Length: 327
Image (cartoon, rainbow, N blue to C red):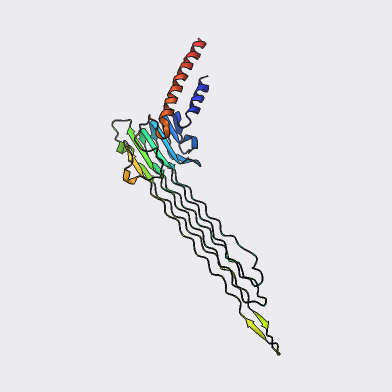
C-alpha cells in the first residue's frame, strides 16, 4: 500500500524528482533523462571516475543534495551536440539538350546550428568534493553542403557554341552553440572545512561552439565541344568552330558565427548572475540562491510544491489508517 501511494506521489511531482538518495558507483555512467531535469535528494554519492551525461532533449539540470560526497576524476559532460552537415547540391548527370547551355548547379544546404551546452545547477550541502570537471561547451556548427556541379552544355548542331552551367553556391555553415550556464553552489557540512577547500578541485568549461565552415562551391559544367563544319563553297572545305566556355566555379558558402560563452559560478551562496552578463537564451531558472532542501520555484513550481505537500499529508493519513487496520 505504501509503495503504491509513493508512486502516486512521484507521478504528481513529475516536474521534480524527489529521491532519498542518488548513488553513482566508481567508474559508472549515469544518464540524466528528460524527466530528471530537476532532482532533489537527501544523499548524493558519486564514486571516483564516474561520468554523468545527458539524454537527448535535456537542456538543463538542477540537482539539490542535502548530503553530497563526490570522488576524484568525476566528469559531468553537458557539451552541446554538433550540428548536422548540410546536404550537397544535386548533380545533373545528363548534358543539356542540343544547342542549349547547361543549367547552374544547385546550392548546398545550410549546416545545422550546434546546440547550446546544458545549463547545470548543483546546490550541494557537501562533505567532500574531490576532482570534478564540468563541461558545458556549445556544440560545433555543422558544415555547409558543397554546391552542385554545373550541367554540361548540349552539343552544337548548326548553332552557336553553348556555355556550361555555373557551379552551385556552397551552403552556409551553422552557428556554434552557446556555452551552458553552470552554477555550483556549495555549503560545507563540516564547520572545519571552508567552501573554498571543497571547491578547489572543481573545473568548469563553458566555451562557445565553433562556427561551421561554409560549403565549397561546385565545379562548372563543360561547354559544348568544338567541331569542324562544312562551308558552303565549291570546294566544300571545312572550318573549325571553337566550343563553348565552361561554367564558372560556384562561390564558397559563408562560415557560421561562433557561439557565446556561458556563465559560471563556483562557490558558496549563489545570488544570481550580474545583470551585465545576462543572456536572453539561457535557462531562466537559475536566478537566485536555493539551499539543497529548497526546490526551484521557476515556472510556477511554488504552486506545485504546495500540491505535493498536500499529497504528502494525505499519504500520512492513509498510512495511519492502514496501520490501524493491521492492528
